[in-house]
Length: 310
Image (cartoon, rainbow, N blue to C red; front, side):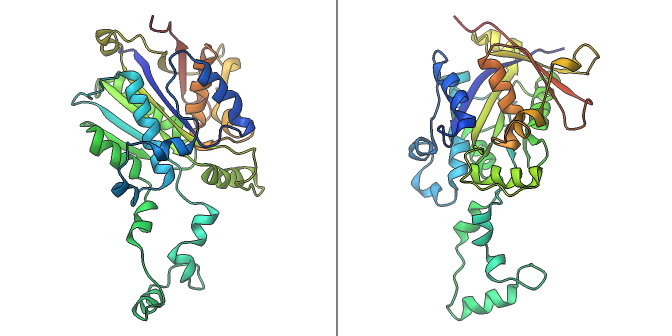
């Protein structure tokens, strides 16, 4: 059975001053040799995305791209993905209150809350409305995956998980399986959830309206690079942790950190990235962890920190 090593981390925090992210930011910043982006402004200002591409990418796309690139460079400064490298991206949807109000469906709405295409077409014909194709492209959920596949040239599996319930757990599960079964030597896995998107999820999960201005909600992007133990050893990279897929046992029940306890019950943060955040926090504190899957105790991801590279 192939062992899976976590060899790269890329983090971009949208607002590091929010209480739920402050400790995480401080811990990550204190890590020796850390490569990190403290805010979305740094991501937007990076040279990864050309001005031409910025027309079709939203700010949260750029944050995700920047974090993914950091993870790649952290794993291997001379990153050149092998032919069997894979990419898995989490996206919990770009629906936000502000975004919904700006949609064409909202502007030209039928009584059943669907798009009134005829009314919109007539308004365009009269010159009373314009359709911006770039605004339509920015709302696509797969922009981060598209950019990474295009520029990082992942040649194996390219997968996007966009369900709202525990997508980060299943993204990690799929990534570990790809490496364990030998379908990929390296897998880049992670995702983005902005403050505005996280507030929508928190509203659904808590049953109470949560505003994006509420400091109890945080957002950002987090990516990991997973690879086979043999690949890491060949490059001389010990990595940060060893990941396993486990079945729950009576002895492990008390040590479980459930995704809901990390992302929801503890105050929110970015709920869609809960499993990713749980693993990052465990690595920063150098402690083992088990993250439970969506179907209660049906599946677990175990993480054991390894000694850092000298």
